[in-house]
Length: 321
Image 1 (cartoon, helix red, strand yellow):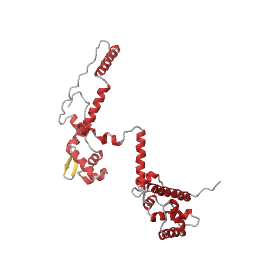
Image 2 (image 1 turned 90 degrees about the horizontal axis):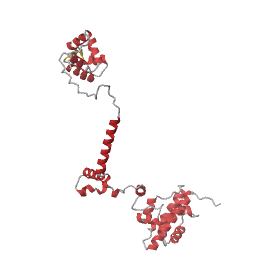
Image 3 (image 1 turned 90 degrees about the vertical axis):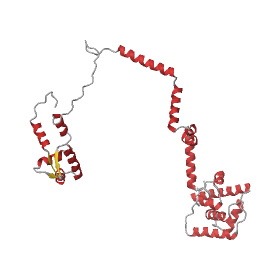
């Protein structure tokens, strides 16, 4: 069994095959051959791996003649062989030249590269990144087409038929929906289905047993009368005021104090932020629960009277205050 070639040797052989196909295509079609300097550079790089004696002037010129590129200038070949041999002596690992660099050295266009099916040789006018993105877009377009999707150039967002009709986009789709609804079911079918639904509901209602108590018909409910207005100072007014206390800790701090407290003192006792205490105190003062004199706050007499009345409040009666 023959030994397996190293990967870099395989890449060198593939590159020489593509360069040979490029030169042969240009010779057959009467096109200009690759630039001598670029061809000499590529053949010298290949000679590092493929030639037993390394890159030499006779070997590079012989390889060019074998490809059909004619005789390369000896001085130019010598310069490229020296450069390739110097890289080998420095111990640099041989690597395949970049595809875009090869495309520039050999003067390959994207059309020519795609027509010949070159993989290792790039093009001078389209970088490898752009080629990958274009190939990915083409692959996704094929996938969408196989799935039955509408191509983007034929989509409504691209053709914009509402502009040709002279209407807005919303009006166009609304008319399309109305046309689809009218074409899917005729009016006679719609009316017949509605009549069948109503008659079926009447039959169910007639067959249902009467669940009302004996001697009584269908119960009717009348709307409740509107509630009477709240009397100022009445029970509902006091309860409404007591329900809008923002924070119980503020009220507890004011009740425990025997003298008016400042906003800062209330914030320290209630363990709250000053801006929150200031906002809550303002609301309580507007409701009449706190007497506010500048920065000093204390429980209002109305709130004190409210708690006194709540402690001695009799049983609730049916009379609304």
